[in-house]
Image 1: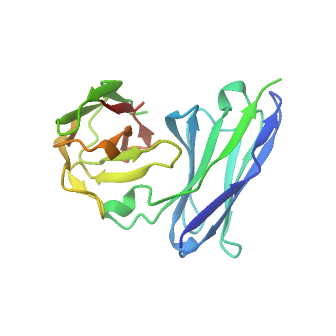
Image 2: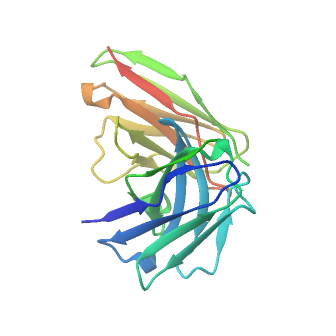
Length: 122
Length: 107
């Protein structure tokens, strides 16, 4: 059974930092593109960041570029995102997602975690 | 960034009726357009990929069409379990983007 389990969410003040983690199991983690996608209050999905299978490529959405850093550890089947200079508008549920990128349906999100809530507020 | 605009925001129909959901892109994305369904309390799941291909296990009542900048998801005969949010997503240009969603209500 495929599982993506996020952790590390919580309440943080504006300007603060937070690190989210995602533990993957049930599929060959090192063969998948991994990403963070966030959702604001039950609607509005936003693709935050993307990292290639071997971590040789990273991509960021404009709203988080320069503030967030995505990383992965294939030996630990884990994905991370380090978030700095957090803003109120970063408040969302953050999903860890995976896709293999081998064509057809695998170019879209195949697996989703359950999400972890990040709240940025004073 | 490619902006995807979905319409309508909310659609309220009865079981057995036909639902037509629209997704318009701010620039051409070729056929790199997918649709997801998100039921309450669940993560989204892929329904349609590359405009018109159904993902594994998706019933035949779901179909996709369109090209370039205008795309449509059609549910031919609504079932009560189709109550959900529906999102389009493009993978033609980074950053990949989603539409803002259409809420489908079943009367």
